[in-house]
Image (cartoon, rainbow, N blue to C red):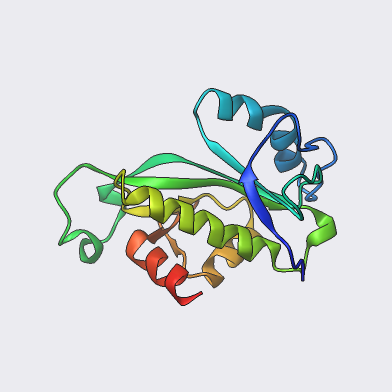
Length: 171
């Protein structure tokens, strides 16, 4: 297991984005060419994992941004005690990827818990009812299910912030 994991905001002058390879070209391309622009335009926060604070090598990354969930996509059981808003505030875990050199070393889980902590801490200042994600494939869907995420629809999964809090407190 990768013993040291430093998670910090993407720094275009430090982190070598071009050498990152998670085995999924869309996720590699995003980090290499689009992440910096998304961060600079305040469309997302991109956090990278390295093995030391000044390391150029990116072990993995994730992105967070704001989102919303249509109330009608949730069960009555989930919404019965919530305000009657048409949309509920959420935090989107847009991308999460681990370089192939670190697969099997629990880097993905550690990145997910980092994202959960950041999303939960932010929700204490700017409301967010849930953490949502759009898994790219069945392997990613299984990964999120392992951590308690539930299906919202055919594409999106979610975990309420109350459940996020339980997960990070149990860690």
